[in-house]
Image 1 (cartoon, rainbow, N blue to C red):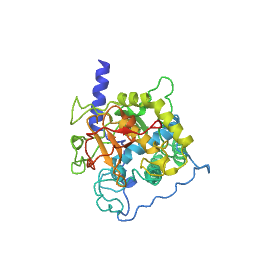
Image 2: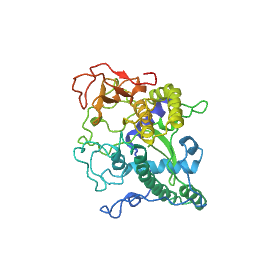
Image 3: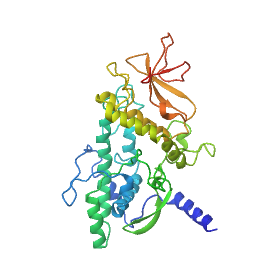
Image 4: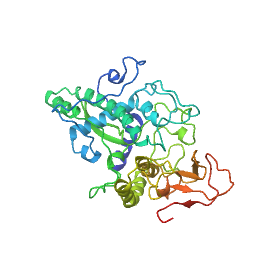
Length: 372
């Protein structure tokens, strides 16, 4: 009976609460003074003790209660910003992909209006993400410091301000085995509702690490079924339960990543220890100068992690033809459980078949490996 009551309460909170209630109007904390001004990404200041903060692993960040509170509160506030603002979670996330719209006055390249700004399959792939994350981190730092100033108790406010001065966004090191008794996919991502402490006491709020709630859903931006009907982001959605509102199944993600862990650790080791060409090391684009032993890349491993969190894509194998070599294609998306070949470079047997730009594979593939 008690469990049913708790689950009911969680359902009510999940359907009503959005972000933390500070008891004041927080719009001035998130609203840009001049929406027409160009957005500039700068260097974050040093911590109050003069040190240069480093980004913590997310499980280490949780051990710092003050920093963790600021992280969750800033994340929640960030996600509550109106989607029509260029510094909203929605639009900053959209720089990488959907919504496909110009950001900060930068227009798309000719013929590329239906893609994000991320430079996939390019030597720029690894370094492109640094200024992108710097923008994200800059906004989170601003919000964390603003929230720290809202604590009314002087002693408490000082402790949160010290934590805010060294705030940096965390990362999750998926290559590390989970601590004993913990899931590989950290449990901070699992619950849709959490009890969060802040300047206005402890409150039940949506967990900003569980999903992003669209406000509103833009079906013109999300043109694909069934994604256009989902009111929040999903991880491993169970489509057999519902296509329009499938539940996320984080246990599938944890199991999938854990099963791939030894392989991915080995792949990382080989790349870090044996690759000497940055182009081959960083991205999956094929270059004629590459060695046959340099067919993996950081981008390819990064793709495996992406596919592991969305295993509902299990139906088709799509390929994209390299523009500079019609006999070399990339398995751009493997929509199935065998995700370790998600970004393998493959060689197509000699033929007169016209290969599609995007389409289903209907011929046999020869996978390159160190043995062939």
